[in-house]
Amino acid sequence: VQLQASGGGLVQAGGSLRLSCAASASKKISRVDDMGWYRQAPGEERELVAVISSGGNTNYADSVKGRFTITRDNAKNMVYLQMNSLKPEDSANYYCNAKILYIDYEDRFVAVNAWGQGTLVTVSS
Image (cartoon, rainbow, N blue to C red):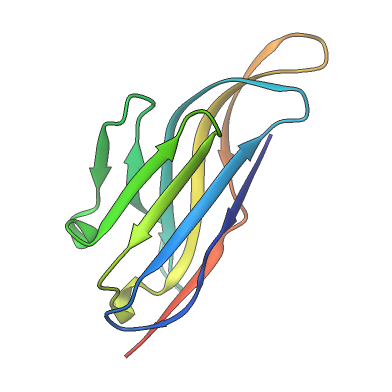
């Protein structure tokens, strides 16, 4: 199982970025449950930014409410994070996360808590 994140970059304060993350498996994904975005700044612990259930229920960190929007495309096993009104304190490595049930090469169902490789967001003041 792989999560491939993209969309990070350098942006001025007040600007916007859209992060994308695609889930894939070597054989077949049976189901993707919660998908989310976390971030980690240098010297800080990783923190939850936003999470979305398979049914579309969302939850956000207080620091990003009203500025960030998480969405997903269940048909494509993708999750997105639209980030508006960015602040310097939003600068961090952003990681996507997904709880995935997939079928392995022995036709067994395997549940994993998968992480993407991280995409760097830098917001200049």
